[in-house]
Image 1 (cartoon, rainbow, N blue to C red):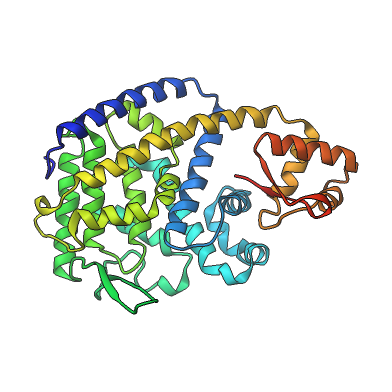
Image 2: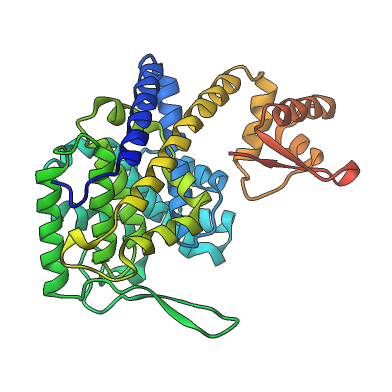
Length: 375
């Protein structure tokens, strides 16, 4: 059973969310194969970009999409080593760590989308395998990728103006404390993931307990958010499980990053507890509920964007592709004329169409105007 009981107010909000899930699942029930692929890819890219940026990576969603396209030519994420120099030449070598984080996160989330139901019951081996995949493109992490921490990984923040150092999280100690806590957590999850009528609450407790343990030397935040997605996809609630492949939840969390960290701290006051009933889960449940409500509304915007994309003319599509191949650049009209070999007037008309449709952003005025891809 859950380690907490939701308040009456929270239960009312959960019922409202459930109605929204039923409605969303009904609307998504007749997706064409092309639209379903587009929505899932948009969710993947948005979640990868947001989850890595929460941890201070630097790639935009447009750049993440370009990386995904580059690595999907042969359908295998393991192609990264073959394409690494090309990707870094495009996105600049000073962002190598960000690229490695993006590629690892992409592999983990793609695995979860494709195999969530295969990981029932969940095992520590699966969690450790996901962590290994998260870090396998970062050579410096090879000694600890997929292994529980061997040294303390207390999370601290420092106010550079005052020099004040504050402990954000004092997690489980390495060794037997972490190993016991993870074994208990996985056993609890498998026994209770569908015991509550509210899957979101079980996922909230599961992920917070994981984050409080902080079992790995690095990558706990990214794996924690991936496990939250996994828990929702594994739910026996058919409406929730049907909707989650198309929901960019981490994008909403990124937009509320300060609140996210404040709520995480509120639940535990920054200290690991061997007794999970001592945490105050409800603030985090309310936060995740709000993020999911907002992310559900985003799906309709993405569907509308898909419709607009299908209606683009051949020339507008060619102009848009010239931006997708150079996501790191802000392009002028002459750049696009050179790339597409289209007449200048045709390019200008396509740019207006793409800007009006929300695919591009216009920056500046007059001769200095540039255009930037909007994901």
